[in-house]
Amino acid sequence: MYLVTGATGVIGRPLVETLLAEGVEVRAVTRDPHNAGLPAGTEAVAPEAIPTALKGVRGLFVHPRAAKDSIEELLRLAADQGVAKVVVMSAINVDDDPDHQPSRFNGDRNTEVERAVTGGGVPWVAVRPSSFAMNTLGMWRGQLALGDTVRGPYPGFAEAVIHERDVAEVIARALLDDSLLGRKIPITGPEALRLDELVPIIGEVIGRPLRFQEVPAEMAAQAMTRNGLDAGFVQALMARYQRETQRPATVTDEVAKILGRPARTFADWVTDHKGAWS
Image (cartoon, rainbow, N blue to C red; front, side):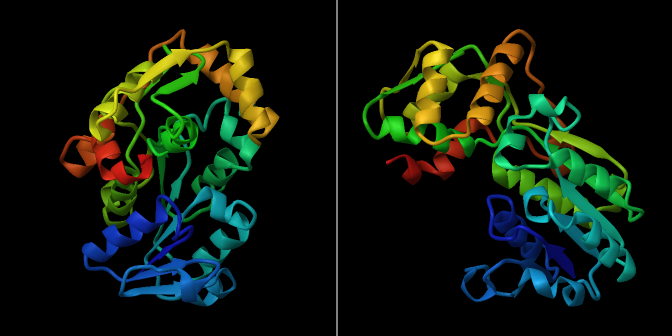
């Protein structure tokens, strides 16, 4: 039996599906168990039922956003119930200065949650993904609904974005395979791509002549803030683009090592979400 927090999110759903496909039992924590729409065979439980739901559980997945306000209590309960392993997802930049982690301005506490797990006394694995390919939808879908041009700053900023299913499958392997215990594992997509390379790839897959047009960072930041993004997040994101444009992007082969196959490409991800761009 495995317990998954954040079970209805971008990582939680494919993780539940992957674990079920491996033939294990899954309890999935969700705020609305009756309307979660999880796969058949999943035992959905509400957060307040966690103390009981941890009974008989071999492995616990900790999603940092779902567990950030209760991580110490969750780990205590897991230890009390004899849970053999905790797998936590954080981020590839988890060791960076907090001001260099834009997601913190949206409420993420990757650093604190990972530190709690790795220092909590229960055997652990920490999975540290790069930025999700899914983020491109939030950044660009609105613009592409109006035309074939994405306007943004820092076209030369590059990163090896990762498919959420690769993240979920690595987490599943970490839950099932004790050989990964005690590791902090940075995982990325197979290659670093510039922003002005990502947009044409979307176009190739969906059959539109898309292009990236550079605009000044200040103009882009003002537009993002007007569209409702937190000003601190926008400032940190622009600083990250500027800072990391000057250095090589991180690319690892951990997905291939752990799963025995290459990481999915960005084109693979766009193909899997082709309908979302229409």
